[in-house]
Length: 428
Image 1 (spheres, rainbow, N blue to C red):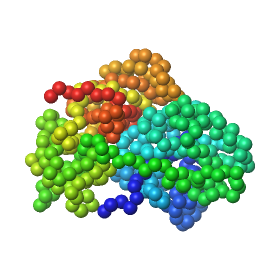
Image 2 (cartoon, helix red, strand yellow; image 1 turned 135 degrees about the vertical axis):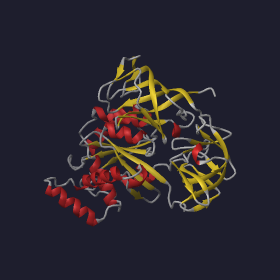
Image 3 (cartoon, rainbow, N blue to C red; image 1 turned 45 degrees about the vertical axis):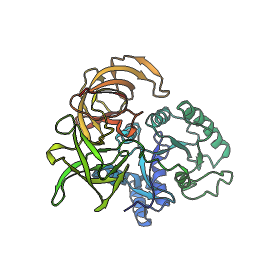
Image 4 (tube, rainbow, N blue to C red; image 1 turned 90 degrees about the vertical axis):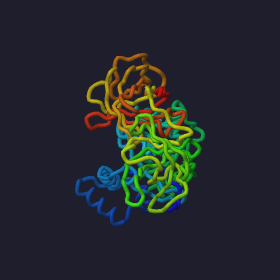
């Protein structure tokens, strides 16, 4: 039942046309996750559309379709097995998808590759991507200097591009001295999975080697136990079974728990009677495990999707209001005070109102650029005060980052996303 290798989520980001999708397609193909036969099919398709050389990008487009059909984000991403990890690769086609993928919880990136075309210099969006990576808590970064074939594999041009990128990552708070820079050509397959013979001067890792060099993600088992409920089933012979992913902490049989907010709105207490994963009974489940459990004293009508099962000794707060940092991704007009969309937090969907726009931040530096703006538009990043209309279980990024991220949806689209910086608990 145990996974053979630890999981690792890796996001590839970069300005448009820097070769991101080609890089990701090449990683899958050279890394053995896409067969020779599949690749042949993509190649024929690319040639048919007059896009010879785009076959690697087609790998990712094909995955996108698979992803959109997938039931959950986890199931529909393609896995790549490396020496050390089971890797889930997130392709971030552009600023808005990137933010959405980063924050909607399930695919939180542990590490990132910033793809920059050699000699394409640093694009404005590149600065934004780096800063958002930093804001969303991606600690580990590697820079892929791509398109080395275009500059005839010149070491001098590689070093010139590195100097430009170092300035930008330093501003965002990454250390330029410890960040690896990889010289590659995704199109030609240089230094993606296989070492390139055309750049004898380059002594660093390939992309696949770099993935294995990233530190293994720490499981947040030291935080209090939290399990947002995905669904509740009635199973003959067992009774009521809530299922979901344990976000943080460790759940044990016999543990006293509280389901928040529960039907009462103030929580329902019980005790863990059984824990099961993949049809196996467990004595305990830990952060990252998807489990079904049975709780003594709690029935089907007492809980629903969006409730959170917490350690009774250290419950999460029900929130009166919270202060958050949000990035506006895709709003048809502007966001002003009083706006009340639906917030998606872990598995909950709760309408929440923007009660105050505190400050706008400069996306390239994270510094305050305007106090109390009248409205926010696409591309803006801001600190805001939010009031849930109804019961919401949430924690601040300092207390529990896994319970602090959210996406904001309106009329079927994700309009913004963010992270709670501080919460004011309800007085029960």
